[in-house]
Length: 447
Image (cartoon, rainbow, N blue to C red; front, top):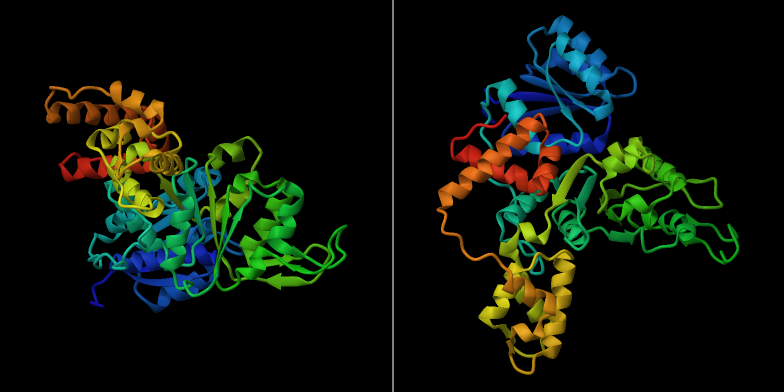
């Protein structure tokens, strides 16, 4: 690595967060050194020349703010970037008076992180080529720009040990993304254990996750290993995690903190090294504010967030997914009539990929020949095609201008908050980020 490569000191007590920042920033051409505490960071600072220190705010021992203050005494020109939960933002803003160049709110947006690091270091690092040459599994479709970008993020995140939180509407494919994260990780040869928290009765979920001893409760006729125990050395995917009770959330918090748990009916501690991937179709920040989900657990789970846009925002995926489902479901070589394809493309798909598969399964059963016709589709799809808006005569540039003005106005209204802007525009956050990136490439600057 060239001697002039910016060297970054990453300070965080959370191994998953450290691993994510380390692997991501290395992939972008930076040299990195990690420290698991503020005390260790202060020991490392005199030993090497650092271009930037990135520090979490809340850590045992020296906090990020205390580490910042002490570092500035001996290294007054060292830029410091703070990472904080939204409840710490007042402290983080105050810390900027002590020399912090900026702060990032959790969960970290990797694009925002990279922009801040480049600004603080002069942007000298040259990003490495896109790391993932691994092909997507045959059952995973990524043709739309949004889906391609999503799996590029997965390729950067998967090699780390970071916990991942996957959001998106029901039926968007969160389990498929978890599969790819595991397959592209260093744990690929270990187990991937999946648990749908909404599908297991509340009284049985604790036993499912953590196991129980023989005689622990009525019906416990034998000792049972929990899913965390089975996932040791691999990954565990907890779908619909918002369905957990408060008591179970507390037990899960401990696992995320130190990898320890107890079976029901036992005082013996068991360790697990399982990497946690969680998912929900609910807005967990709203659940936290409503008191239904623990704030501390939310931030432990949400080291990095991946949002799956709904199928209506990635229409380029509709026909390739349809072809995949036909190949899986049809006994003979079935194909779509052109009018059938138009029906599929014009429908808004409120049930997302799951609904699309069900529709294709029905059509394959009803088709009497190899050609799937519109009449083989549900009536609501045919109606949607009839009422689809006719092609507009306005030129593309005019429509682009309308979209750009809408985005600019929404950003101003919501003070550049990407999440709130996306909600106001009625699109996913990932779709908004893609549109902003496209506008930057066209020469329109956005902060």
